[in-house]
Length: 485
Image 1 (cartoon, rainbow, N blue to C red):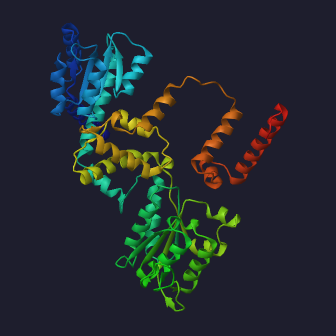
Image 2 (tube, rainbow, N blue to C red):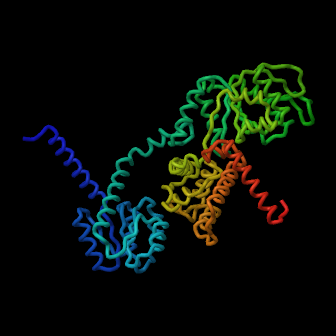
C-alpha cells in the first residue's frame, strides 16, 4: 500500500526525468577532431550518456553551424589541421560569445589550460577523456543552457524592471538608493547627493525631479566648478543691462528660470565662500537679486546639490559654510562607487550595448567572455561614466557582431597585461602590505579619508591613527638612514 507521500515522490521523480531528457535534447554537443578514430569513439561515449552528438572534422563546417545558431556546446580537439587551434577558438567566439567550448588536448599543462580558459573556453580536458569528468561537464553545461533558455524570453523585462529613470542597478545598495529616491521625491525639500565623480549624481537628480510633484515644471542644471564667481553669480541670479562689461541685455538667472521647479547645483563644494553666502540667502529667504539690480525677487525652487567631496571635512577646514551645509543636508543620498556594486557591471554592459546600438545604428550582440572578464577585473576609478565610455568606444570601433579584447581601449589591455605578467614580484610583510593597501584606497578616493575609512571597514579615527603611525615610522626610518625628510 502506497503512503500518502509516495505519489508525490513519484511525480517529482518523473518531472526530474523529463527535465533531464529535455536538457540533453537541447544540448547536442558538436565534436570537432581531425582524428576519425577519436571522433567516433568520443561520439559513441557521449551517445551512451543520453546526448545527441554532432561529429565533425572540418573547422569551417563548425563555423557555419555556429553562425546559424545550431551549436550550444563545442568540444574541440587541438591541434586541428588547416586552422590553428587558438585562432579557431577566437573566431568561433566572435561568432557566438555565449558558446560553451571544451578544449581537449593530448598534452595537459597548467599553462595551456589557463591560456585556453583566458581565451574564452569553459573547460580543458586532457586526452583520453575521463568518462566521469566528461559526464559531469556535459551535465553542468546542459543545466546552464536550459537555464538560459528558460529566462531568455524574460531578458528584456528584468532590464526594464531594474532601470530606474535611466539608472540601472540590481545590487542591494542600488535598490535601497532607488527606494529612498522615490520616498524623498514626493516631498518638496532640499537634497544633498554625495558620491565620487562618474556615479550618476545628475541622473539621480533628474529622476527625483521627474517623480516630484513639480515634475511638470522646469529643471535647471548648473555646474558650479565650470564657472568663475562673476559668471556663476550671473548664471544663477541673472543680471541687468550694463551691470558689467558685456552685459548688453537683461537676463534671467537659473533660479528665476526654474521658479516653481528644481535647480540642480553640481559640485557645490567648488563655490567660493562669498557665493555660498548668497546661496544661503536664497534657501533661507526664497529671494534673489539680479547682478546690478537693487530689486529683490521672490522665488520658490527645490534645490538639489551634489558634490564628490566630504562636506563635513570641508566645513572643518573652513572651506564650506556650516550653516549652508545644514541647510542643504536636509536629506542626504549617497551614491556608491562602481567598486561597491560590482554585481551590476554585467547588467550595465548589456544596458550600454543596447543604448549604443540605438544611437549608432548597430546590431552588436554583446561582449565575448574574455572581454567581460577583462572589464570585471578593472577597478573603474571613473565609475559608471568610465564604463559607459569604454563600451561606447568599443561599439564604435568594432567591425564584428560582438565586442572582443581587441576592441577595448589600449590602456585597459596594457594594465591587464602588466598586472598579469609582471616578474618583479617579491614577498612583503603584512605591515607593509597593510600600509600599501591604505595608501591605494586613499588614492582611489582622492584623499577623502571618510570614504576611505568606509571602504576599509574601519572608523575614521582608526584610519587617522594608522596614518599617523605610518608617518612616524617613515620619519624615524629616514632619520636612521641619514636621509633628508
